[in-house]
Length: 483
Image (cartoon, rainbow, N blue to C red):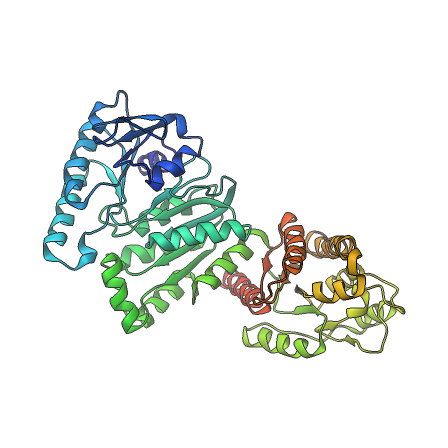
């Protein structure tokens, strides 16, 4: 990326001063920015107020002394051209037009208004939007929702939809995903998806790129930007509007030309971008790519506590393009030393439930079993399914919490060894019945989840999610091996 363009993007992601035009008492952008390091360099503009959120409120951006790098425009649609012209007069470097009501309405007069805004901005200012949430950058303090994550991380998100960006940021925070930049670009009349892709491809703070798009104005340029980005780091893409009804919804949402699903799938394949099917898969795979080593092969070991579920788990893996190979004779012999014969399955999946409870006949721990599996030449990844809270409460009663802490530390120890010493990909499933109303059950599951997340393991609420994410890791690894 050329140095001049990089400098332009620095004003977008790392502004020294920010103004919100159209600030109000219930304006989310002002509230979000007041809670970040940009608070002291934040200026509020609205002629109807003299003060907001304890800060002076200016009648116009032209009344602010000194320069402004970045502006959020949140005024009624018909006022946008005037306000944008004032920003250009002020010397603002970049604007984010939050305001909706342009070409996405389908009305000719609103398309004309959007064209007017586009012409005003052309060659004079960098414009994000309209009809979008703009930019979140934890490093600089830019935010578009209150209480957004302030922890910096390796994940960059580019979303045509504002709500999608908000949900990815909010749920991602709960799932232990840490972000470098999150961008919502809306109708894209000035800066478009390829611009942000080009930037994130060369951004040293971004290691994984997640895309959500509904259409594009320039397929050739998009393909070139995706190809370049995917050459340098993993790129995941979710395409909205792949059905006839979805296509129509995309047109009314961001005014996009959605195109056929076959064309988009071909485009992603040619650009070497990993296409996913839904929001959850994008989130789950992003999590895995941000903190798990890539598997060196398809061989997957599953550790479970149920013979019945082990059959279903095997099917899930095979359907996802993975393999569940037999353990070597040496591995089975080592496991037999730890686990009693009756009621267990020393196969793959490994059903070794007695070692969860230190039952009679066990001579090893779950950590020992995990370490043993990590040495098996047929095994490249391990999926640990933990679903034992309710039974632990039945066995240990009031002592459950202390025992659970010990057991979780044992599991973490084994998983750390498999990942850090043996280079295995380790996926954790801590499942909880979605219909349970037992707060104690929920608190114990949260304890286990937090323990694994604290060691930067990807944690999933279901086996299907963990296996699908692992499959996508393997897809990316195979793609790297076969350019």
